[in-house]
Amino acid sequence: MDLELTGKVALVTAASKGLGRATARQLAAEGARVMISARSAEQLEKTAAEIAEETGAQVEHCPADVSSGDDLDRLLAETRARLGGVDVLVNNAGGPRPGGFDALDDAAWQEAFELNLLSTVRLFRGVLGHMREQGWGRIVTIASSSIKQPIENLLLSNTYRVAILGLAKSVALEFAPHGVLVNTVGPGRIATDRVASLDANRATTAGISVEEVRAQTEKAIPLGRYGTAEEFAKVAAFLVSGANTYLTGQNFLVDGGMVKAI
Image (tube, rainbow, N blue to C red; front, side, top):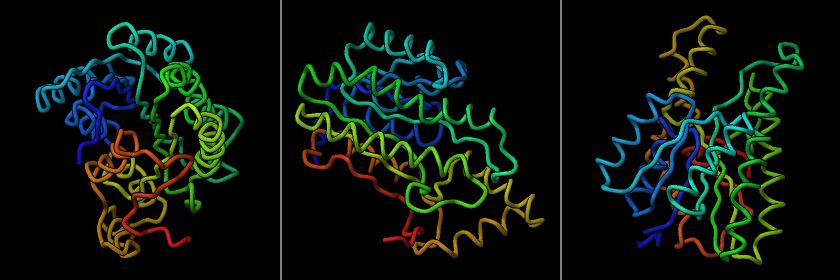
């Protein structure tokens, strides 16, 4: 299937590794011109060079902390200067700190708000004008399986990921007449550094090994294994592509059937 991404400008945040990196690589392989960002300049430069070498695509990079409004303004300005207006946004950010209600103070809530929800608002604001003007645009926000089912000890994620759904749905309805499609994708247990960190945290809390945690989790996944970042990236790439012409305002899980909710 031709995803009709050749020449499109794609901005992917938190893309130096994990889901962001895999999605950026998939878009580059489909012919998009890609800007990637992340906080670590050294890792970001390495990732950009690797993706460019593997795909032959134009891959630019610009360090940015998505929780900083100034950083996002600079990132958007750099993207426009080097590549032109953003046709495709893959909105990604690291997960907020784990913890239950009693463990989280105002600072933790504010930090997660800026990292996950406010960053999404700012990025949407930065790209939607151009998309509306040209009559075409695609946005995917990478969230979590918590958009469908709360995850134990991840109260901040459970709260702000669902808030993102409300934002994305509202924006999808408002901008659909302008050819802009907006969707949300929630990964389940995908083998990334973030999931490895959460498994380690759970192992410490439960007093068991990380291997035992993973084995228990895999039993709860109908496909019997953790997913790969590449499997996730294929779904995200379709949703932000020209091949997607009628899906908007939706939220999808890439979780191997783990979440049982209908």
